Length: 326
Image (cartoon, rainbow, N blue to C red; front, top):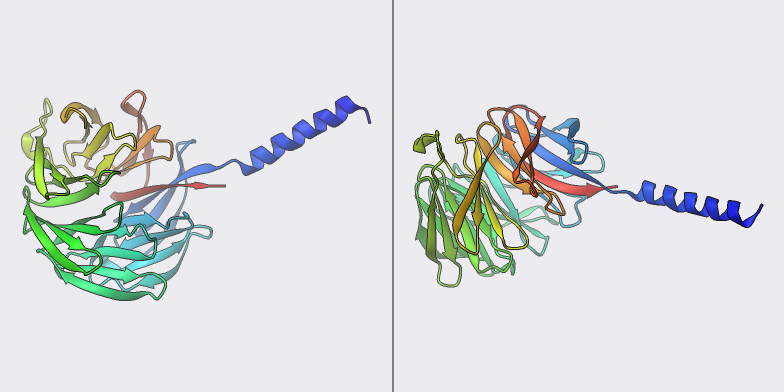
């Protein structure tokens, strides 16, 4: 065999290896009304399959290695542990009643969940599947976030209209901050200096200085042709470069784009009906939105800042996460 043929075979072998090792981005979407999770091939913009989970799945997070999903099965009163290799429920964590949202501590060992019916924040050790602590918070706790350094947890209470600041070492509620009516989501900036909190009925987005725990900016949203009562901020996502904040505006059917440096609303992007939550893919070239009423996921091209595709999923999609898979 001559050298040219051997060289060609070597190139083909490398190409075959790279093709085999190619990673695929998969999005996992919880469907409230179907008790399922839709699996989307992000690049191909299509649903590959659905798998069954508990009743009324909402909040979802991934383990740090991406092998496991933790899903709030609200009406099953549990956090379900899903092996993503098999897409089977392999266990449950003791969440308390009606878990709705969920946050994973940076240590990867501890999960926080809000219990809407009991006005509690439940803290769970994953390995032992046991409750570490339950903390009294305001009425109807909803949004959750853990600071990047893992020292603070925050939970929003919808009826009390407060943000509760929790010391993760002592499990003590160290402060309470008033916000707009029915706060829903909370998100720390990557440097941990700012906290963003959406208030659904108040129609506002509050930005806190974390050190002082004081509001430094409030946003109100106004969309041409949309009544102000329909502008209901819920999910919040931040770009890794610190340039943009994105806010899902519920039945206004738009996502607000905020220039963080100038603290100004740059534009509104039309998406599906009753937009709930948001998630980036890994290189942040696209942003996915779950749209409850229209039962689909909108794909926002970040370079164009507009929706380029809509993907039909189950009934009332709520949560969404993205992982890389070979």
